[in-house]
Image 1 (cartoon, helix red, strand yellow):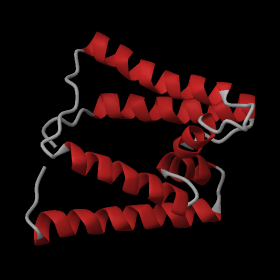
Image 2 (cartoon, rainbow, N blue to C red; image 1 turned 135 degrees about the horizontal axis):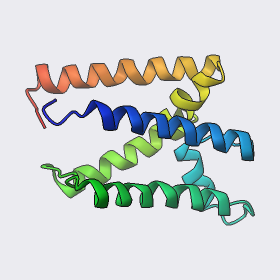
Image 3 (cartoon, helix red, strand yellow; image 1 turned 120 degrees about the horizontal axis):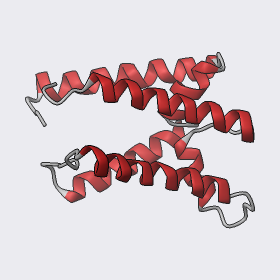
Amino acid sequence: MENFTPYSAFFGGCLIGLSAALLLYFNGRIAGISGMIAGAFDVKNNENHWRLFFLGGLIISAAVFSHFFQSSPATYSRSTLLLIVSGILVGYGTRLGNGCTSGHAVCGLARFSKRSAAATVTFMAIAMLTVYITRHLLGVSI
């Protein structure tokens, strides 16, 4: 927690909420990132342009923030293969759960969705269990 910056976390959270609200208001779409990625690369879908712009905005905004605030890029001490396998498992989990944390926790809870509440509770419980097992039982630290 030595690199925790509450101000950037607060403003980042506000921007995520604002972007989700604006997308819902102007396009009638939910800002679930896993669904956007799946839809952006669906060749049968004629509505991928807004998805590509939204996803591009995520990437560009991170680059702009990094440029102006001189934040250091994330570094990983694990193998590339582990990162790839982890990404595949996360992708599989978002399909299994019919959405990711951005779709369920940010957008679904704001719409008072019972399914999203159940999914968010499940995400958080599994995350806490994973941290407990890896850090306290297996002794792995990042």
